[in-house]
Image (cartoon, rainbow, N blue to C red; front, side, top):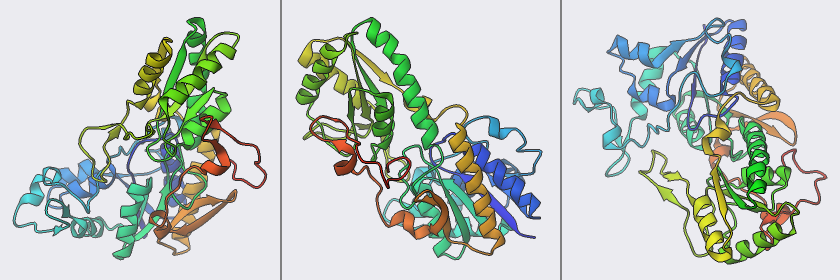
Length: 389
């Protein structure tokens, strides 16, 4: 009997639970056995084959009863982590793997250890024939590593930044934009009542698409994106003009968390994760303070942040998550591996997993953004993908 393992890695997004449920239901209908790996790649790293309690903690047998109602909520019932088993810091090595009797790591460099051999032994121990990781480019890049080592892997892309290379759409993006538009419009009431300038910081490390599309749909005055460094003096001047031109005497600005000023750096804090990323956040407040200092206007600073990825998915994310899940099981049934399900040119498809690491997905600034006015410039949509990206 084919045995499937499924895990979720990286940040949570709405649509993960419906995807898990659809994979489980379809897999069981096909006669397959399926188990969930808790906490993403971290679950496989921390799994101690010699400890029954460890197996119970990190592996969850899945059936239709277990997943019956999970599609009604956001997040992931399997939990998640940002663990990279190929690059484990000394502080991240599980205690049982520090034992000399478990020499299951190779030196990646002077400070990091590669526990891929341990991961592969755990998959063999669990009897998993095919692994389905659901995640962004970081999570899926390690899935591609396992595929190159001979493990059967089928990937499902998710990220609210919609920045996995090779697909037009990732699970979670539509809901993140929908939430952002809703919160921007809700914030208009206080901003207008107090005649202020609102600076709304949105998620988006390297890609400003969430900020761009949200600002486009919500009709904000200015949108600062990750791809284009901005001049605070110029931005302040434009926003002040917007405020004065508004009959209600207020203005709205969105800022991607990965944005930075001309000559400045991206605002980061904390220790880097296993993929080399530090936490982002704070550029919105810095931008608001700069605008206030330049214009003298009162500012409302609002970080939408985790609210963008909280709660149940919208209909589009439900649709894509369910269809991606069914496609993945179709590929397993057809004895295919090393592929990522995708949407390309509006059609469901699948591509080599290696595509994920072969390029970088960013906003097409020339086509979609006015670098002088700091706002979306979308005039010609004929022939473009549904989300213009």
